[in-house]
Image (cartoon, rainbow over all chains, first blue to last red; front, side):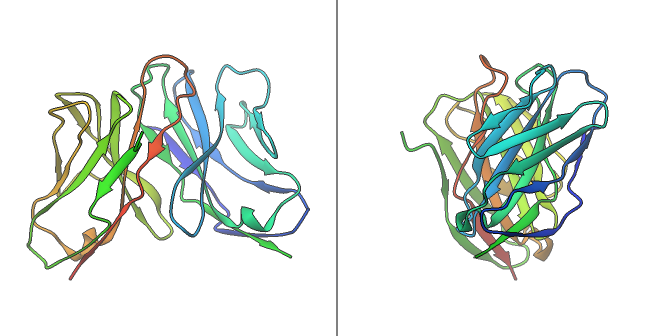
Length: 116
Length: 115
């Protein structure tokens, strides 16, 4: 069964510094997708970045990049040049299979606080 | 497009009462799902559907029923509410065809309290 683990319940980072949020996953499928979502205090879920299991390069979206290490089954989110608005909960998620109907399963989340 | 809409935004129930959380999307998405969010536990999948007439259980289905009679709507029914069902409930939808990185869109959530 698929499983996502985020081992950092809370993280602090100084404004303008980079921060890495950890995510490890477990799956027996060869085809899967990894996602990161942001949830600010207002509660909405915001999609940040996606990495496919067959993608050879790490995904990047603006200040977000995904450090994908397939052999270690990790998909860490890197946020460069942190901003105060980055303070939020961050969730890693995985969808198994190339069938787009696969379930999306989430980790427990990491609460990031950016200090001025 | 309204995206994914959920009603109500807030609800208080007494133990044993039943109710239906409504979810609708206007993006013609095949896939719809329900999650509950509890502190420290992330989002846990309750039920999901890959199309009208097709539903399946997620990680925590007990105490909840769903049906999918149309592409647009995916209601979640609490049969006999219990305090353990106090949570924030999110509905989500996405395409199942096309790009593999199909983003899942979330509704604004329903905050349910069971006394």
